[in-house]
Image 1 (tube, helix red, strand yellow):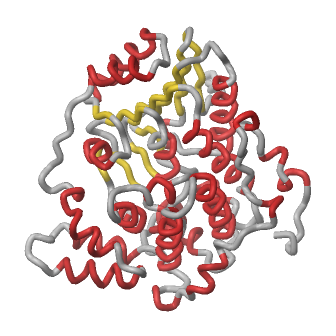
Image 2 (cartoon, one colour):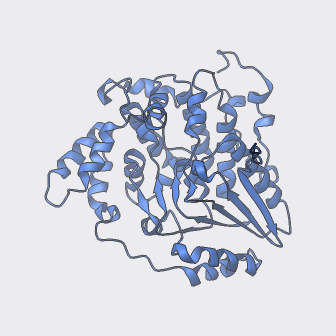
Image 3 (cartoon, helix red, strand yellow):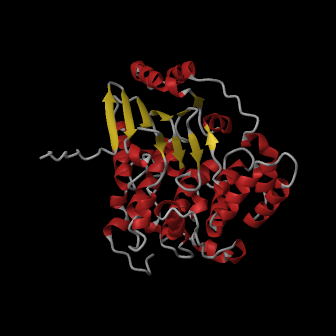
Length: 391
């Protein structure tokens, strides 16, 4: 009789310490390194430990397999749809941790090879050094499934040149490695075959000195030359269309441009935009526009509120319908509610942005000496069963 093979429990995040270098490997290759509750907890544990460790100088983060990280675990959210606030803890922890990605005290290098989307890209874009390859694929497609641009991207996108941020947030358009560097969403382009050698080099340097690390990466990197058809070469059209006040006006302007000679690239993008959740599009545009006037902490607090309110389906359950159509039934035929932009009440959209009671907001530490305060465990969420009135 064949003996049963018992597989060891998969370590979803690997943490290694090599003298002054620390390595994080996202280790769910079959799931494209999507971010689960366990992944967030382990990331926070390692990052806090190493920031406080005087011996740790350089932190490298990478993904195993063909993805860096495809973002949040959509099945986790879908499975929790019938249990109120089932994902509140992981959402709180992720937004709280996003603040630390942006403000980390040790030199960080992201080796973002392969798929780097949504929340997964939040582990790349804020790093001091973010290395991409010819196989890197970036996108923030959340609006298409009834969600919103999250994990700090209302801050990141709102600071891109012109109205590129609105374009990426609303269309979910994909950028390749070279485009990411050109757009300022990554710092260096390194051919994938050189990535293992670069990693070994960074480990052997055994330092977090920024100039030394930068020089080492530059030894392996190539100058970026954009393809002639790159969407980044369409800046004038993007700025013209995506500067409009409303989603409806943006689509109307984009349609007008699509009819002009040489603008064949717009057709597929426009088709995807029109198939997206009308509610998700309106929330996303408002969030990115607000992001221009908000500091990082304000953006994260806002995104936390919006995420919780979307998951609570206070104005629409589109996020669950979007996930169903994309990853559960895979019929790619979502039935949005409301079904069209003109049916989405702007006053209702405002509801998902409304502040929570002070003790229920995301707690972003304001003082340097309290950087790692504000954890979920110390929040009102973990210590009380909230009544509907308190929410």
